[in-house]
Length: 239
Ligand code: DC
Image (cartoon, rainbow, N blue to C red; front, side):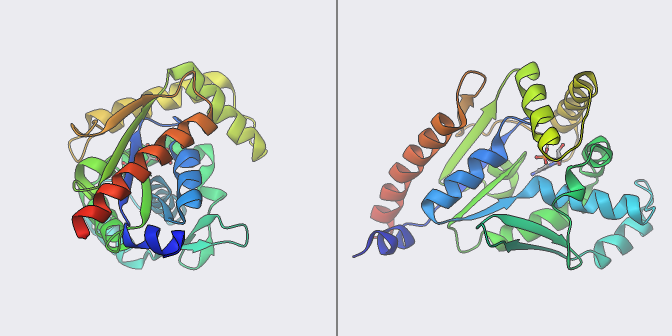
């Protein structure tokens, strides 16, 4: 059987969680490319909802407005010509718009809303039902896919994360002061890990990786190595 055939037989779910700007998306994207898996950035979904709420002046505290907005929001992921997955909000590519600071400044608040989380989790589970998926976020290994075969929890020190995020924003021609980014990361970490609904916590069966002194290549290699060994186990279990 071809390598592709073998990989297809042993499809698993890979959950990558962790704090903001730890390199989750970069790692997840590359791991998915190497394994031929689908990559889903769950943070992009919360960001797209935030963009819609801000553009349509949806009050974050008005349940009726939120319900109506959630009914009107359609999120889809499309793989572009470079093989990169991009998010579309009601048919429009919002990949760039959702990375702006105005979204980062509001997204943690939007993602504390219970009905928003319920809608996103339902969509995420649907996308992962056939396995062969790498999803990154905050609650993937704990809430979305508690049965995921591989769970990775990324950490890195605050300043390292802030400089990485600043570089990423600069590449998108968005010049943001380092202090603003540090403050944003600090406040999102706090909201994300102390909120009532699905707070950011490491799943007990997740492998923790501190990426402060690790290159993206090393990070990716390690996750692929772990994934391959889980795929062998999954293959054996399924016969
Ligand atoms: O990964 P990110 O920084 O793009 O995520 C943006 C925000 O979305 C993050 O501050 C918290 C929220 N989020 C979440 O609550 N649950 C997820 N699974 C992913 C993101």
